Length: 362
Image 1 (cartoon, rainbow, N blue to C red):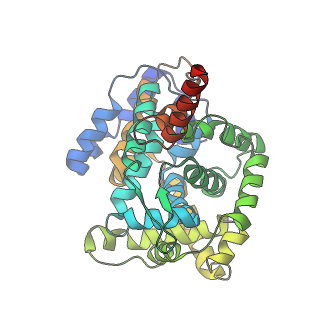
Image 2 (image 1 turned 30 degrees about the horizontal axis):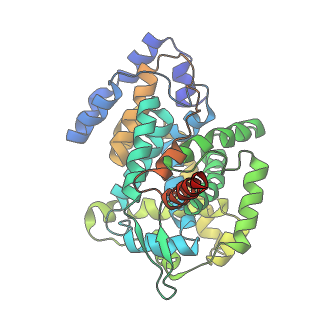
């Protein structure tokens, strides 16, 4: 039984008391510990777009699985050759690894564990941040925009597979085919909150597999930026000692443990196909870590270090979800974001408006 499942089997009063039992450990995190606790105790308007009965709560509650998805997802995103150069020009991963991972986890935790207002807000905030990640592809002069719908689709659809496989391998080996189907049926909400309009995404394991199978020969390519991020993940620097030196071994082990979860095609083009000893040893270590990562003491000691916002959102859901059921997701935030400031559909809308005006004049 997972930590979330175990907690949700208790009454609300029992759950709050049990979850607060080790709150004193947050004092070891200083100001970030206080911020995490404040987030956990903040008022909440509803159960959010997922709720306690969702598979997404179970997947993202495990910081090990979520961190593996964030880290390996960055590498997968770099296999989009257009996106690779754009991201490569803007990423801070090389010198702010912990901060970059924390900000990724912040969005996913807010979208999955937050109430509906929080989920909408973290989506808007990240979309606006990405609206400044634009650039030109060296050599071709092609323009890159991080918020382009196709760039976002590649990042999230390719990442879904690995995230689910990580959960199956290190989170819950007993997860069923029905759990997987529910996971994909839920995850479009996360992507739409970030800026993908409704109707753009595959919603079943079969459709996701087909999309990725088509993307491998027709979109994916191993470019220089992809090689640079791969070099960093497999051989991160030891300096500065804080934080890179401190997290160096964990970055290596976590990434190598994720390699067997990647498709044969990705392993082949990345030169990762024939390194069995390193991946097997890393997987053994991560499986042992996965057994204790959700223990309340470890949860209070480690998760706020990786991301105090992620801890705050998850524990706010455990302590204050009104259990009224998930909020219907019907408002298409992705289209609204793409049509607004920083979006990539403004030009199309302008053309349509112009055409409509000309037609009215006739």
